[in-house]
Length: 166
Image 1 (tube, rainbow, N blue to C red):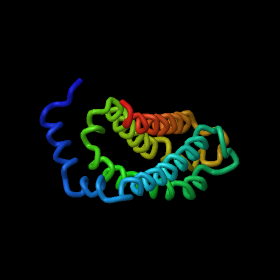
Image 2: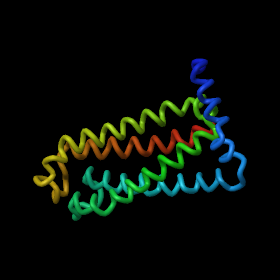
Image 3: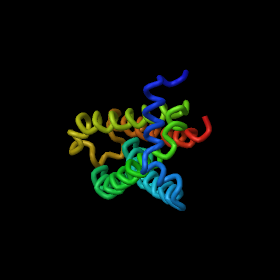
Image 4: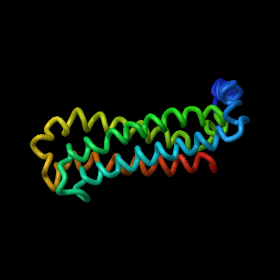
């Protein structure tokens, strides 16, 4: 389905901005941003999936959820910052092709679902973590939150790769 004309024009304007032109035309800028993006992905998704596996009761059963989270979530937050900034800058350079990609709605929707899952988790079962923190098998709500998170982040990676191809 083709994009609305106003969106095509907005994407064109973004892509023709001075910063977008610099990212595309200045040697090494685009590949350096890609490297920063990949580093951010590794920190964000690697840390998140490790916590998710613990929440699911699949890995790290001897560790308290709070101990693991206290160590890994700052790395995930750093990764999110790197991914957000580098991703936004990379997007400006190729806004039209990303906007027209069939994978873009999937990627951004899945990021939204992952974010909503985090909010629901923290305002839900996490409020009672003192009751299950050291349990090898967390409550079903925690296991479900971990599974949703892991699936979302893996699918975000797949959709991100597909941005270049569909």
